[in-house]
Image (cartoon, rainbow, N blue to C red; front, top):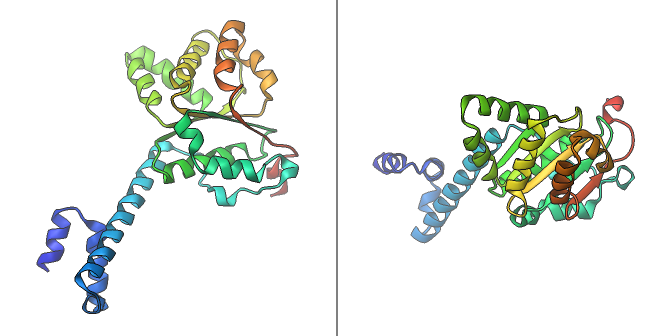
Length: 238
């Protein structure tokens, strides 16, 4: 049909699919022009939102596919329902606040971080998910090939940066400086989530240089939301 061809040429894929469905069921005969147009526009809007969500989640590279609805609000594990509800609004992202998730290995830190990341994508925010060591390998490689400024600029423009597995190894030399620059670029401008099996009190030893550690923690910790998970690894129960 000519109308469908016009929709496809204008890249109105959601509208086109809805029109085809309406035509096959002959529903378009039951609707007024304004009613039919409203349904078609809603279908196009939803289709574009879905495609944007798919692009954002694909670009983020999450460790898990998760949602905030799946999070178990068990206060015994330190997962507070009210706090999760607050974070789910995404206000912390627009304000450029940080979220720190700590707890033993396997207690669900990465899953929670992924769920918050998916929620951010659903709200239209750009998200990047990194294991810390892979992130630092990325910056090291970028320094070698001369693209380091581009890497820093790209990450700084990300609405939400999620850094997982912080504290598995001590940071040395340029790693400390790279992490400092990443955090500095985002301070009060863009949100950061850090997941670590170490309590914040142990982060000084990980960063290992007192001046840089003070600067990083000052920008991350004092005004952050904190999720301190308790209990044994949930993996043991599977």
